Length: 235
Image (cartoon, rainbow, N blue to C red; front, side):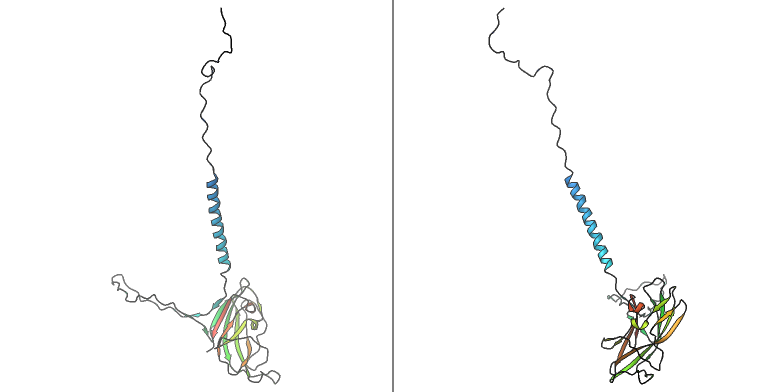
């Protein structure tokens, strides 16, 4: 039997026992867009919450307590009465608030929990009389005495120097602080300690120019540091 010389060629086709290979797996989807979207929404919510906190924190302003004019009552209308069309196209004007008159009582709240004081301006002496020669206003000035009645309506003791939180305002908008002195129209209300249910009366003294015209009296508890301020019209 004869043999062929030279290299033998490999047989055609894949080796026995091998078939076609598996297709490559599909590429994995990236979660980056979803993560970025969630982070963006969280940032917007966080910024919005911070902005709301800043607005709320900065909204605290002093509150002036004044007398409010009563609202006019509307006549009742039965169901059988047909409604009449309104000829007024303008919105109703808001009821204006006015300063309390002399003799009126305003309930003011202090900085301490349970501190509530009824404050009444009982009398205004536009030219108070000095009690002695050692207590006189300067030449060209005069004394003004504002008499107050303070009644503790709360649960806390009211320990204060009322004159520190009392301001006299003239018709030009100028503000005057209280002063010390003795007048015949009353005892100075310089320092008080009022337990719940108790009350005190006295005057707060001011020295102002003779020609000044009085306009308003303003008072606040805790030496004027309480947010509520009572206001009375002196005109």
